[in-house]
Every structure is written in C-alpha cells, then in structure tokens.
Length: 450
Image 1 (cartoon, rainbow, N blue to C red):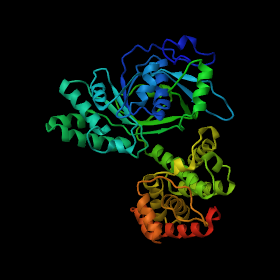
Image 2 (cartoon, rainbow, N blue to C red):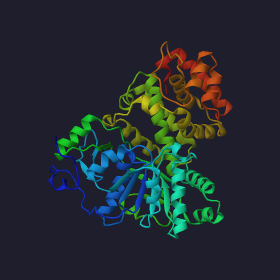
Image 3 (cartoon, rainbow, N blue to C red):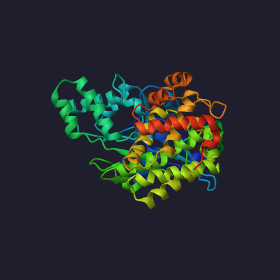
Image 4 (cartoon, rainbow, N blue to C red):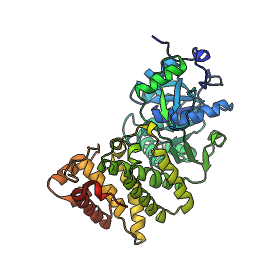
C-alpha cells in the first residue's frame, strides 16, 4: 500500500507539486468550526497564503459532530491536496498546510475557542448551526466566549463564512441568545456584546464533491495517498466587514470593506439566483449537470434575460453587475466542477427566499413584471412537488417542504402549493407562479423562452 501524505513525506512528493514553505509546528491562532471541503479549499487557501508571508494564521479545525474530517486529516498531519480544475488552463497540485490540528466534538471546540492563543473563530456550519440547542455552533461559540470572559482573556473576532445573508448579524444574535441561556450574569453577555466583533462576510468558490478519480490524480502527482483531497475552481473571493483584530487579509486578496451589502446582493442575486435558475430549468429542459445546461441556447437566453431583470432593480452599477454576471456564467460552464442540476436545485424553499423574493419585491415596487422569476419558482415547485411537466415528471429535488408540495399538487391545488413553498411571496408573484406552473404543465421544455 502506498504511504499516506504527511509532514515526513513532504520532502519526497512529486515534482511540480507546491508544498508548504513555512513551519507547521506552531500554535494555531484560528479556530474553524466545520471542516468540510469548502472550508479547506477556501479559508485553508487564504490561511496558507498568510502563513507563506510569515503571518500567524495556522488553523485548528474542529468538526462538531462527524469524525470524518479528523479521520481523513489527522493521519496526514492536517495536510491535504488542492486540485484546481480549469478546462483550458491546467493548474499544478498544491498541498495546503494551514490546518495544523484537526479535532472532533463540542468540548474540544469550546476549549479551542477559550485558548489564549486564539484570535479568530470562523464557521462553515450551514444555516442549521445557528439554531439554538446543546452542541449547536452558536452554543459552542457562546460557551467558548464565556470561558474567555471568566478567565479574563482578550476578546475575539467571530466570523461566519456561510452563505447566509447578513451572516455576522445572524451569528451574533444566535450567540448572544445562547450565552444568555448559559450564564445569568448580565456581565457575561454584556462582555460579549461590547467586545466581540461578528463581521459579516461574503465568500465564493465552487467546490464539488471529491471523486475517486480526483484521489487517483493526487496520488499519481504526489506519490502518496491523500484521503483528504479537495477539488475547486481556480476562482475564489472573500469580502469581509472591517473590524479590529482581523489578520492582514488584504495581503492575500481579501476585500476588507466597511459594509458587505453590495457584495452580498451581487452574489445572492447574480450568482446564486442564476445558479438556481439554470439548475431548475435545466431539469425542465432535460439536463443532468449545470455545465451541460449552460450549452442550451434557449435556456441561457432566458437566464441572461433574468439577469437583466435583476440588474434593472438591484441598485448596483449596471456595467459592473453585468460583467460580474457574465463571468459567473463562464464559471458555471466549467465541466470539471460536476455540479448536478438536482444538487443545485435542492432546498428551494430556503434558497429562493433569499435569491429571488427580494428582487421580486423590488420589481413589483417598480411596477415591473416578475414572470421570469415566477417560472424559476414554478420549476422548483414542479420538481419538489411532483407536478407533471409536459406529460412527464421532473427528477425530484430534495426540500424540507416536499411533502406539503406533493400533497397540494396531488389535490390539484396550485395556489396551495405556492403558499406552502413560498409563504412570504407577495400576492402578485404568487399569482404569477401559479400561472407559470400551468404553463410548465402544458408546454414542458418549450415554456423556457426568453
């Protein structure tokens, strides 16, 4: 059996592979909760860049529940290979060394946050991690901060890297609520309120699931087995609200700004929303993957018109917004990313609430039509609720409200399906979505016209 990647193996990896150029026997200053592929490919790369420049940015990664990341990374001393997949411009493999410690469990996380060396806590735990309850990310962060308060330690910066609107505000609220339930001393919650920064941030990098072929490619390049390979596109970005106590992130290409509102709108409305549209209408048009769907001229004409509808009311500089959207569509066409339409189209009850409804509200306020956005919502309801489209059913997409959607569809109650799936939808948009559902049912793929 081929030897596993490790610190000891670094001097013997294959030619052309970039390896860490810094000492790794250091005390971590960043604690990251949620050691998934995205965190490793995104935060892990920025931290690795900082370490190469001589800054303190070593990470202690903690998974709150699953030991999978620890099982993959601990035997490899936290090392893993990043494979950047670009169809026309191959990129050499890079071994990232920024995760110097990887652990599992809430108690480990609390202790790591309370460590005097820790200056930054970051999270990629998805929306569920902000819900209250024992062992939740919010409760763990609260316990760690309270331990620092009791020990008289310096405050921290706590930053969410999740795809949640106003994630800093959401996380701050959740942590303060959890802290109030843990410690009745008003001084405890007051200390967190007054001293702990929760900057909002917007992160972006497409990180598909690692396949056996990716692991084989890494082994061929390294000469060692890597059980923690991550795959990503070359593109990456990070915009974060400026607060005291951050590492020198601007030195590695992070945008540190006074407010992230424009970056958040740009990503949610001009990247995430078109992504959902391509996925859901791609299913209507018979496509399996996002990359395949981008080759459908009729579908992409619709998506470009949808983008124009959004730019019209987004409050962003139009030329910059269109240039950003055009670059996004190029990224979606990368076949190496392997994103499926069913995968991207899942969880529409949550995604469309942030990606579509705010734009719909602006368009209605401006007296503009919302038919294209309604067709996207209708495609999601059809896929999640089992509505026959053009004589057949779409591949099912997962969603927390699928049962309610199917029940409404089965009894022929299309307004009820819209109400179950998008209860916050304005009445004119709900009516437009019902009309779009009827059009989809009657015309199938031909309903997708610009």
